[in-house]
Length: 268
Image (cartoon, rainbow, N blue to C red; front, side, top):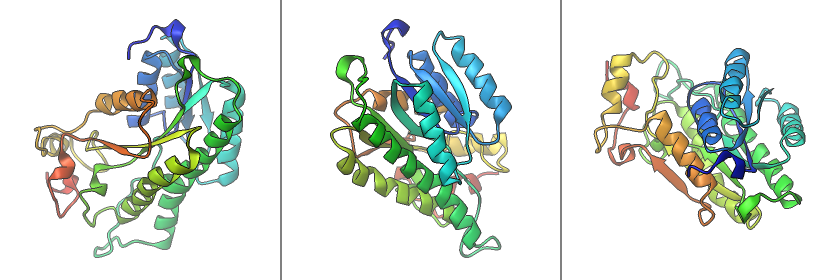
């Protein structure tokens, strides 16, 4: 995994790479010698800081802004990046919306909420995946070592351990999970498609640090995933030529414990 920087001739596009899991994934690829295209939506300053940190590792990086809810912007983003990173070899769809709704609550699902989640969490990743396939199918600049390029979709352990909380989010991620097998079949042999499903890894919403700490321990292993765990798994999948059409769960076994509520509501 720790290849010398001079041996890596590949680039990765990470969406939502300015903050949280996306940032850690981008940094981990850079540590392994990959050039990194950093996508961001509104977090421009954080994206610039991420690029600066990556460049200190001796690899190429650049920040690109795009609204993933805008189809034209998504297409323009990919075209612009492939001009700057002709060695693009992996796409990690990390960006997502995570807003609360539940059918039987004071915050029920609305058309607008569902559409927003579907656009960013499902449609944009599928569009980018299609563009990545077209790019790889026609690409004559193959990576060193004959590695097969890949798309990695960030999912969620709750897709196995379902509960009614975050309904729009769950529906959008469930549809994206279904696409992993479909696209893997459709894009072979030019492009691998994989799912990566974290457990609770960072505090979300109004969750306190103490609440997060308690929730993080509610797994068979006594701890869920860390951002570093997820990032290392993403790099592994990007280099695992024999893996496609499947999802890797990195969650300390969290998905094995049924829960009637999202885990963040089970702690104070």
